[in-house]
Image (cartoon, rainbow, N blue to C red; front, side):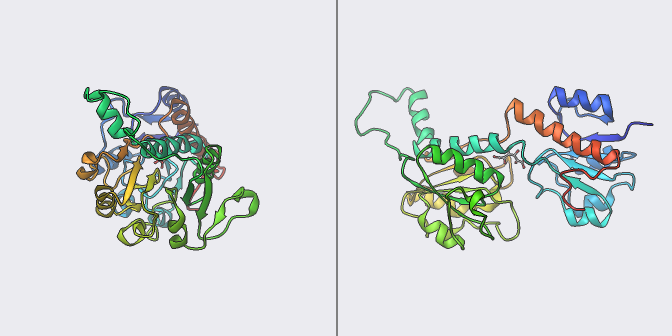
Length: 321
Ligand code: 8YV
């Protein structure tokens, strides 16, 4: 039987590409050039499947222009806000993502952001590297301790729960809001807030773990930031557009919020330039899943989904069937 033909939009870890080469007639992207819409459509020509990432915008227009041969789009990500699932379903194209395998890595980055923000790591590192660190000072470079603080988690899903577990080990008290309350076993002692407002009011640290949807976009805005305790911290490992950048920047610049830890941004990689000038913004370039272990596991999970599909089994992570 001929091997399925696959267009892969980005360069993937070597072990993942080796498996791709073994099991598929795969068109790879060895130089990792960022494909344009046209490149994706050209690449899709005569293919059975696409393997895409968060940097590819697979909207209704692109899906509509795909050749009929493309039957599945596997995304190398847990998030799928870059793909129009409804348009894909309408064309009979299955979409599958890679949940679970990046949960721990992303929760680790959430803790790094929490710590980096709380301890003012950006300005401390800048002071040291610029030769401005003259002396240890009893009152110098004071941050906030996480121990004993209330962590508000917006979206207690897989990554939210993994972050909660780590935060508990740091002595934090965990609170959350989801549309629906979880069963006690999954809450693991976290306090449920039936609405966003109630969660924000008690969040010394607010950590975002919800998907980007029309309901969550800019849910962190001028009005909701006002609800946060004085000198609260905002952490985002979910999606940039959950935050209204202007509002967050204003609150950081005025000192109303103590700090923010951000791994994701609206319009990546062109983040709002004002973030770069804020000493209380601890920023990372979308590293949540960026470990060797996890990026391999994401690739293998995407391939498991493709293998299932081409073997006539429903992919375990199918999103739109
Ligand atoms: C990120 C992601 O690294 O899979 C996704 O959808 O965006 C992850 O790989 C993480 O969510 C950002 O902290």
